[in-house]
Image 1: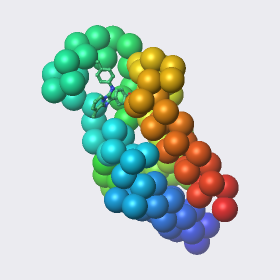
Image 2: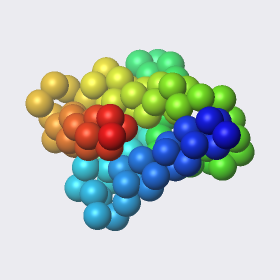
Image 3: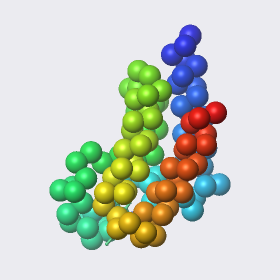
Length: 109
Ligand SMILES: Cc1ccc(Nc2c(-c3ccc(O)cc3)nc3c(C)cccn23)cc1
C-alpha cells in the first residue's frame, strides 16, 4: 500500500514538472541531451550519468523505482548535469534552477 502511494505521488509530481504549462522551465530537460544535435561533443565526458524527464517517465512506468527517494535522485540528476555542463548564469542553467524550484515546491507537498 505504501509503495503504491509513493509511486502515485511521484507520478503526480512528474506530470506537473513535465507539463506544457511549465514549458519555459522544462523544455531543455524533456528528452535526452543530443550532443550531436547541440554540437557539444564533450557532453558525455563531462556528464557521466545523463538523465531527462522522458527517461524518468519510462522508468516510473516500468516500476524501476523502489522508493520515492530513487525517483527524486533521478530528477535531481537532471539539475546536477545541467549545472555541471552549462555555464553558471547561462540561459539553460537558469531554466534548470527554475525547474528545480518547481520540483522542490511540488515534491515537498
Ligand atoms: C554550446 C551549447 C551550450 C549549452 C547548451 N545547453 C543546452 C542544453 C542542455 C541541457 C541539459 C544539459 O545537462 C546540458 C545541455 N539543451 C539545449 C537545447 C535543447 C538547446 C540549446 C542549448 N541547450 C547547448 C549547447
